[in-house]
Image (cartoon, rainbow, N blue to C red):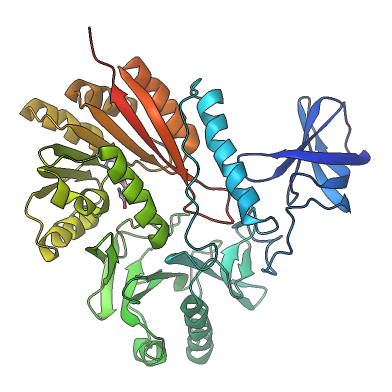
Length: 452
Ligand code: SAH
């Protein structure tokens, strides 16, 4: 057993699901952040538990071959990137392993895995950022939360975001300073500006700027606008009203101050309207590869009905609408459903319908209606699908289920549940939609086991 403050030489042999390094000492797992497989370090134990310990690399004795110098100065403080210090190929290998481990450990499953699909871009691939704004000891910080805290690290130029976002943050900094704009405090719940929320449509270059405020109107908005107009692609300025004492970034109400209040992207050849509250994949170029894989698994023949549950703005279903008989999308956020309907219209797609509601309830109603889709697409948030939804889907009895997931753990759990409901995993493809972070997307193809 190791104890707090012990120091010893340790070889890093694997990664945790959060992207930290792991080594073994005396048969015990030692977790050390910011290390790479192959590193030999001098490890100082900062926390010792019965079954594991947490260490810090006080010195790197021998550097792993896959190590690189992180290009970002904030890497060690910011909670965003786990893999900025290792080569991308190594990151991909660890993500493949993470998905396989989730299936075997959580799901008890060992399906066939296709090789991971890398992201087309490893830096500046994100099209969305929410920057907290905070004044600490009189100093204005706009940036990202430090690891496991609500302390804001002043942003600098985050290498996952488009360069224009950095430019916009500097504009806000000047505007706040010149106009004495107040900044929200979590302690007193006073002050106006809480977050700066930015989105960019990569295919068209359009940019949305959203000020999340503890108030109903934006003072000095004309002066902000005149500064923003110098940013290439700037399309619309909106405010989002959030007056609650909450960690949740966005409130429910948005108002446009300039422009239409939305931007338009093109994904898999389909125009997509993006409103502030609607979900949209953060890595557009990666999403095209993900959707292509999903379409390959759906393998449309032209005469099938498709049910797209958790459809957001309808992107997955609409991207294959011209190859199937019909698409029915279900989504809980009203704005996203409105966008989905507009998306069908602006693309001249007539065989898609969208229903606003909880996936479980809507699936139950569709089952009662007697819907018989050949394929059901599932793309839930990180917590995965509700158990009753999986049961309803199995009762609807599609031939195939194509499950898109941003969390391998809940995907594996749900695939195990689906196995009990008569569906077998045919193949899983990990897709790296989030380079440099520990997150990984996957798409799984499941087939109905033919009943006897
Ligand atoms: N398929 C879309 C969106 C996936 S994200 C795309 O690829 O862009 C998951 C979506 O599920 C979000 O839009 C979220 O609003 C929605 N959602 C969350 N809980 C839900 C529920 N209980 N019922 C239906 N939709 C839900």
